[in-house]
Length: 147
Image (cartoon, rainbow, N blue to C red; front, side, top):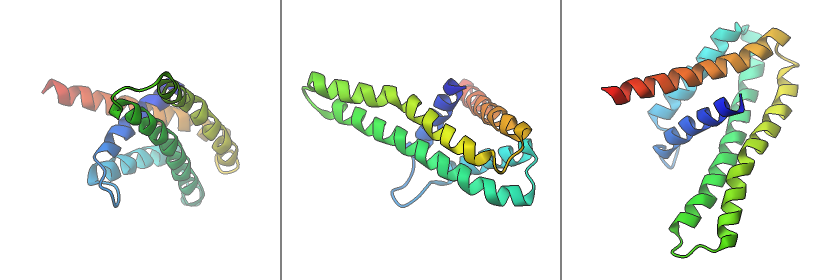
C-alpha cells in the first residue's frame, strides 16, 4: 500500500512539475478532481460525509505533497552543485528515504480523523479507491506512451 501511495505521489509530483507559480494547472486540477470524484463514488459518501471528509482528505494530500516537495528540493540542490559533499548526499538521501515514514505518519494521523466520519468499510474502501485510481493513472500513462 505504501508503494501505491508512493506511485501516486510520483504521479502527482509529475503533475506539479507543470504547475504554474500562482496555482495548479488545468491538468493538476483535473487529476485531483477525478481522484476525489472516484473516492466519493467508491465510498458512497453521503453529502454530509463529503462536507466533513473531503476538506480533511485534501489537507492530508497537501501535507504529503509538501513532504515530497521538500525532499525533491533537497535532491535538486544536490544535483545543481558542481561538487556535492558527502554531507549533501546524506541529507538529500535521508530526506528522500524518510518521505515514506513521514507519509505513513501523516496517513495515521488522518486515519484517526477519518474514522470519526467514515464507517469501517469506507475506511477500507478508501485505500482500495486510492489504489484503483493509481492503477488507472498508470494504465492511462502506459497506453498514452504506446501511441
